[in-house]
Amino acid sequence: MLLILIPKETNRLKYIMQLMLTRLLGLEVNYTTDITFFQRFEGPKFSYGVPVDKTNLFFASNDLLFESKIKARELNHTDYEGDPVFFSLLNKEIALPFDVFAAAFYLVSRYEEYLPHIRDHHNRFLAKGSDAYQFGYLHKPLVNIWSLKIRDILHRWFPDLKFKTPVYTFAPTFDIDAAYAFKNKGLTRAFGGFYKALQNKNYDELRHRLKVLLNLEQDPFDTFELQMLLQEKYNYRAVYFILLADYGPNDKNIPYNNRYFQSLIRHLADYADIGIHPSYASAAQPSLMVMETERLSKILKREVERSRQHFLKLTLPETYRNLINNDITHDYTMGYAEVPGFRASICTPFPFFDLDLDSQTNLMIHPFAVMDGTLHDYLKLTPQKASETISELISEVKKVGGTFIPLWHNTSLNENGDWNGWLDVYIKLVEKAIKK
Image (cartoon, rainbow, N blue to C red):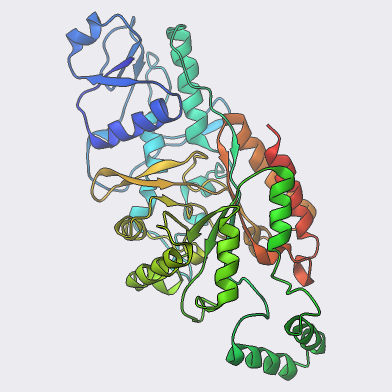
């Protein structure tokens, strides 16, 4: 058991200590505000925010973890052992020259997303407005890195202290925004597709549509058997997020009551975990998520526990509160659409801390590191450059024993048009990711 001397016990402090010391390092932790008890304790211990004497390990603090207010803060960025740090402290007697616990809390709580900020045209927090992007550490899981630095310090002071070894894992995920390009869309949308292709004089698409509907060719978005073959070959288990919204400008999947679509969902559930993909429209009308989740639950004949927002529409804390109210216990939205990297600067699942309510919740956040659309649509990378970018992110996760979560789509494996060559990108991703 590790004893920590603190000025006072707060929800913020307990949350981040439990995350960094217990969840990441496997340590049992206890707290005290009694200096005399602390000095008499003969086991491994350190003080946080309370200087004792030079014979005791001391981590200095600022005030972030000892209050419940949300306000703009001066971060005071510096560099420490090659990594950017903030909440710097000038004290030669401290274990680290910055408040590592406050800095980690600032990142994983997404503190900056509660402050005034600029949003994009989808009303999303902009990656380029984040501290991680502006100071060049978006590609680094700093919270994991800092946790290992704490481990090294504790090990030097207390060689007999036993730590959990972080174990790297691979957890691929897929969003099913459009299960099929041409099939199973109903007569109105089928005729509309033919009319649009004819109007644009796109005769290749007309022929392709006709052959698919006559079952002479495979639907280009129907890459599901290929996915199952890859999953079997490389021995991994994926998570699928299914869009079951009513048709709208940004919600264009197959009608939820189509029997072929429902059969596909049940087929995927035999080999993978299934979650809901709350619609774009549900961001403005949270009640729609109730309906969409019920649809998936009825198809699967079981409760739905996982979720990822369509278009990655995440507003804190409202989006996560809505998930909690709908009994969702695992969310996979924590990441950016426009750039790859670690939005919360961590590559390990962690519980959501609601800053407004100053409390930890039971909602587990699974941060993803990269999305196919980010590399292809936003950054316009070639398949080769995309693979290099993915490889660098995987290496960062492996270094700290985290979980590498990519976000992919069935549509990007079809090898048609602009996506030609991207099946190989995904296969290289899997081959790199599964190697320990």
